Length: 500
Image 1: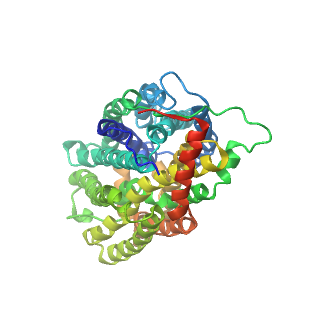
Image 2: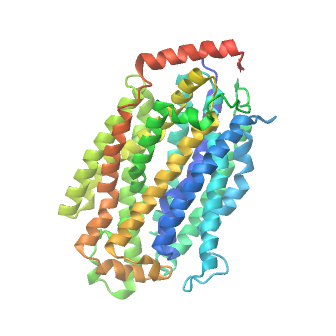
Image 3: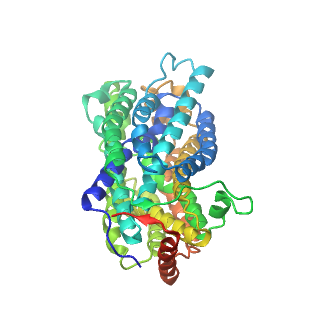
């Protein structure tokens, strides 16, 4: 196998910094869009469910379309490089629009026009994000033919990108400890600050990848398919290893719950740190409850960040000893056990601090799946290229992009479904204020348990299911070694150029 190194450290660093910038922006949507729609805008729960599912149906068309575009066209600036810089300004604008009150609409009198506006902004944001995301995460395929070096680049990118996600998650939490928490429209203000600051900082960092990355593998553009040959989608659907990774990615939607559901659990699961809300005078209640949301969210989110980053940092060392499949299955089973223990210990003790060790372990699969699944996709594309002679780089990355967004959508649906189960209609709170506090204090223990299960039972069961298709993933051991060696020889025969 080819062990030659092609990519200098400065270029790996540039790619990681660009991933950091993307993480700052993407985490706005993945961690807080449900809370913004439900608790700030007060949107109808069924509308949000329909919007998330409709957007994912469109992604099933849009993401492969983008993958096909990058596979068929190479510009004078490169195949993947132009797209991040072209999408900077649209993503900044759409991110801020997504997290601000719809201009010209009254939240207390929601109209069809307002719902159309919200849906249009969300769907268009997803389309523009896809136009940058698919090419960006496809770049390691063209930066080096060395699969170990490629894995390292992708691993660093995902790890540093995760740091960006943690920073974004921290912004609303930190604001909850400031004087702003005394304001009735605090939630509206914190999301405006978050979206504006993260997009203005993150997107210019992301655009660096368009200028500093070198595409060393000059793959031929995909040509018009001969009717006798299988289509691109057929090639992908018949690649068993890739389908196992895709299925595992869909089933692992629960991993997003620790971040996405944290603010909802902080509001309505009945955990109060250091005070009894029923004993507080009314003039202190708003500030104390807003700060408690930040405190409970902070406990869950810090545990998530530590566990996730610890896994990401140690992964490059583990690659030398264990197969990707082993790391994925082991972390999923460990996360399942920790989730069940967090549910039981937290509920019967009603002490969130006792659950910290379990939340830390539950977060390990987040880091492992985020990084390793992408590397496994790259290996699957190698296998497909050897078998078919086609390198569907963009479409392969589009599969992962679609799976990630589908997972976020399922997480959102699970959160809203729990609101429907508990009978808690946050859509009637007309933008938050003190109404959510009264609703939280009126919830019974059963409703509190249902909300708490969003960060314990739901992700635990999701991780258990994720391990099942991974068992059938077979791009490991001697098979993988043989594929890499034969692919290198095939590329030489086809005259594919690899620059220094």
